[in-house]
Amino acid sequence: MAKIVVADDDADIRDLVVFKLEQSGHEVLAFGDGASAVEACQRDVPELALLDVMMPGMSGLDACRAMRADPALAGVSVILLTARAQESDIEQGFRVGADDYVVKPFSPRELASRVTAVLQRSRT
Image 1 (cartoon, rainbow, N blue to C red):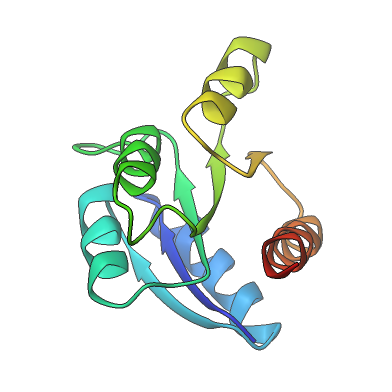
Image 2 (cartoon, rainbow, N blue to C red):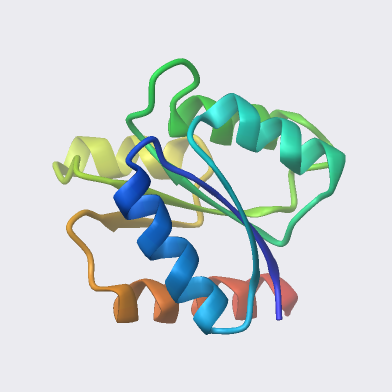
């Protein structure tokens, strides 16, 4: 399957996401902040990064911007996870380069479907 980096400062959500993705056969690396996730991506480029928007330090938006600015990471697909559901928040997520935007609370099954869809699009 795919190598996926997950960054969320909420350990319960992070563990749920990791569990669901591993259950789907993916190799998952999990982090509690955006900076660690970006560093991990630079060391070993994944196919996909799932980034929480609101994290202390480097937010998911900042991490997405950093990845899009790095030529080695520009092709990594990004899904933003967030409790921020206003239209302006979603627009901002897509403006920084996200491939998808999932609002919390989310269904683990829906998240797995979105991951599959984004990965399929990126492989074509």
